[in-house]
Image 1 (cartoon, rainbow, N blue to C red):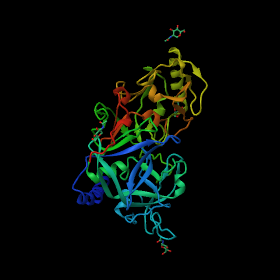
Image 2: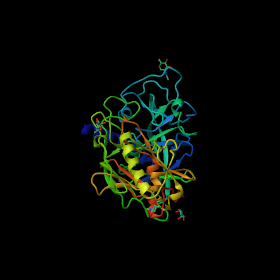
Image 3: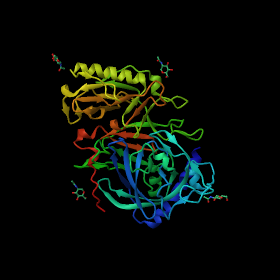
Image 4: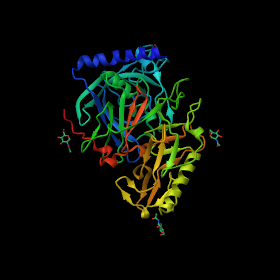
Length: 436
Ligand SMILES: *[C@@H]1O[C@H](CO)[C@@H](O)[C@H](O)[C@H]1NC(C)=O
Ligand SMILES: *[C@@H]1O[C@H](CO)[C@@H](O)[C@H](O)[C@H]1NC(C)=O
Ligand SMILES: *[C@@H]1O[C@H](CO)[C@@H](O)[C@H](O)[C@H]1NC(C)=O
Ligand SMILES: *[C@@H]1O[C@H](CO)[C@@H](O)[C@H](O)[C@H]1NC(C)=O
């Protein structure tokens, strides 16, 4: 297995970096893309340029997605589109073993003698088959402070999908940008194309009117007024779930999603009692904790949800915070009248996800735990995932906002910051003015 990986990784370097380096004397150390929060779906959207002529396309950011997929049925026009031919290096990079024909006029997404994968709409959990293809992608480089020169990857691999797969995604979106742990996820392809570290960082904005950011490559990751969020990260191992968590997948495929090892949970620094079996991933791939950008709020298995919310309600009562009726999808809500507000959000009990040891924890304050559903009501922004979810804890978008998360694929390690609000900045404070 190890030698196969090395062989394919060499292929990746050969196929992607040689052509791009030949064309560009400039080699970026990192790349940057904006991330908007869509107000109606709460999905996180990014824009990249693809095709010849280049065209900006909007994609939903899918942290655990295996690859980029794009609707090729509608308006896909490009002179540089190339389907991946059966048994080519591109097919093996994509993990595509099938080989197929298409019985209609040739066009992007419909060619003979091509391999396919299963593009997955991880919002609706619908997957279908789609042709593996390559086309030009262009994106801005960065020095970590501003965007710089635009660079391109001439043969960026992705999957074509039919238009119907877009159902459930934000208006105007044409696919999903998979940042998952595969050889054709965006992070691996960009790292291979420009020979930089297989690291990327995500910083989601809580505002629907100001963009957050994703960096590919190492830091610095600087937010106005000059806060380098790549400094003072806390690190925890990333785990591989041996069983895919995608909607459809080839037998034996591991999950491309990012799992961390939550060992316990504390509310106001008091440990709560949980069934620890649920916190680890079993042989069937069930259990554990993953990070998701397609779930707007953290989803907890029902017994964990019950334990966390009970502790939170009790601690809140001790702070004289009065409970009010739930507002769907939230079950636990409070009157905001007794809740003070600080830079870190509403003053409510803290929630700690305790990781590899007692000294390593991910602490959530009010800005990440609470959702203002109206002027008078604040709800605990966690939802009940029922009694048999595949993954026991899914840390969702609201809980990630204004936190810098750096994923290091080579060392299988996650670095996470404390809320940037504590450092008087936010994920929306990257200076998007180009200095190229
Ligand atoms: C694929 O080959 C079949 C049989 O030769 C042909 O009828 C069909 O038009 C071809 N499709 C494409 C997309 O080229
Ligand atoms: C803990 O969770 C596991 C996995 O769902 C379950 O089999 C077991 O019965 C649970 N234990 C308790 C004490 O509820
Ligand atoms: C809560 O309210 C009670 C009665 O109004 C008061 O005595 C107590 O000091 C308050 N506690 C806190 C923590 O504010
Ligand atoms: C943002 O970057 C541009 C280009 O380097 C610079 O001119 C501008 O002053 C920066 N904005 C702030 C608020 O620092």
